[in-house]
Length: 107
Image 1 (tube, rainbow, N blue to C red):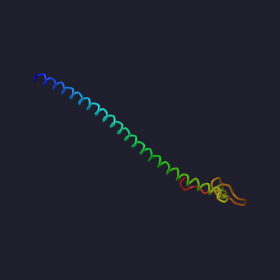
Image 2 (cartoon, rainbow, N blue to C red):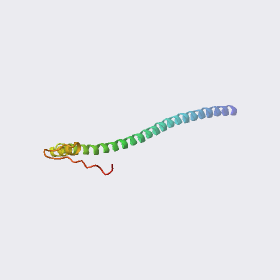
Image 3 (cartoon, rainbow, N blue to C red):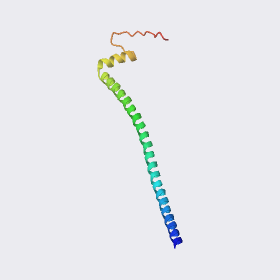
Image 4 (spheres, one colour):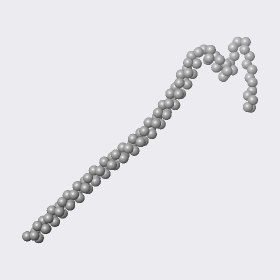
């Protein structure tokens, strides 16, 4: 009868060991999938932050360019500025003006 109890205990302990092993396998799988999900999301967050920084830099550049263009628009709305610019750039003259070209010293 003592032998029968030992075999029963060994059977129970084998079942218990199998349950514990199965529990740890399932638990390990869950932990593994959660870890994978976490680290893949961390990588996404890092790449999105880098992209955000690049876009913020681009916004700064475009804002500066917009300021320059708005300044040019205001200048071009002034007829005196347009006339002076045309005279300097395209060598136009007013009535009675003479255009004298002075060569650059670099040439």
